Length: 253
Image 1 (spheres, helix red, strand yellow):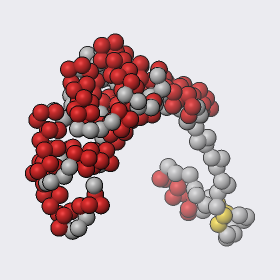
Image 2 (tube, helix red, strand yellow):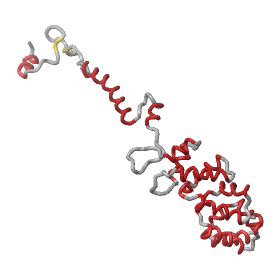
Image 3 (cartoon, one colour):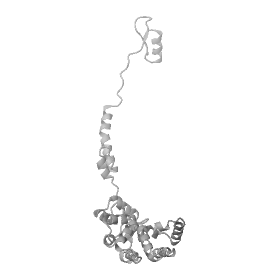
């Protein structure tokens, strides 16, 4: 064999080139070796079986499954109200009652979030929730208006109907607002129930009187703009002065 083969024998390596034919012929590359399998058959079978099992386990633990978005949505459906003493999400009886009478899940979430900072939404259904809803309906509010009032001012469930809510409505009637207009005032401004008659409402109306407004003008203003009851007497006096200076006071009445 030639010097190239002798060198390979000394180094213990197989020759990488061989002669095509005879002495002095051109060098030719060795024949290609067959490629090994990328993955053994057993490993491929293991991956094929393990993938669905892993996906099924992920669905059981997290409720997420790309092949079943509807089932996943039901599994991961958020709860509405949390019991402060429970480690798991659960509907309170009050939330379940609101849902049963036509409140949407969004409205119930809004009621629960506005019930009070750091409080779970769990008022007594028989002593708080039902009496408040029944009383609001008795004032002439429609079902949609009742839902709006409760959703935007859910702290109403923390108030006694006889001791706190009724006196506010009685005061509205005393300032000349008729029964058919009281429901309109409440529906347009539910925050009215967060005020005290003596500490807030009476001083506000007195500030209007101090500006020279008559009782009929005050009544008309409260019906059309009940949010004025949320103004402090000082702010209300300033607002009236600005409107008078702009010549817009008459159109605001």
